[in-house]
Length: 182
Image 1 (cartoon, helix red, strand yellow):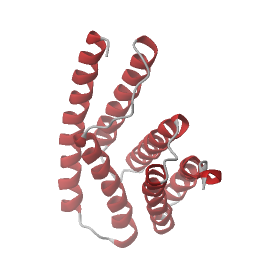
Image 2 (cartoon, one colour):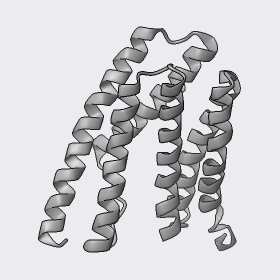
Image 3 (tube, rainbow, N blue to C red):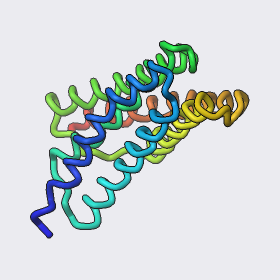
């Protein structure tokens, strides 16, 4: 079984490799196939995490690859969907700004204090889940006309709230840790 320790990392790399085809399909208006690949990417995210935990195949590389794959997929999707005017630019800007602040903060903490343990907060996990559901439903709406605009508006507003709360929480808690040197 140890011969398969590399599998979660390979799945994360596959997810990174799927990003450009998904974005290209969206730009070409092929929302059906983009939705299918996006769903597969989301499933693979759960699968690599399950395998890593279930079989104790966790690694430092995997701890970095998994969130990088998630951030790249989410950022690419928000930028692309805003570019083709399927979502508001301001929502994409808020989501991306939060992620940039978190990544820059993590890098600074890593180099100035100590290595960053990967420990997303509950509100951050909720935020990520809402973002992924939102992106999937935007593609679904474009491909199949479901759900309607009001559902996307409510979900987009929920994302705005969780982005602000989780982003503020990260900045405050990691600033406190840095001051205390822990």
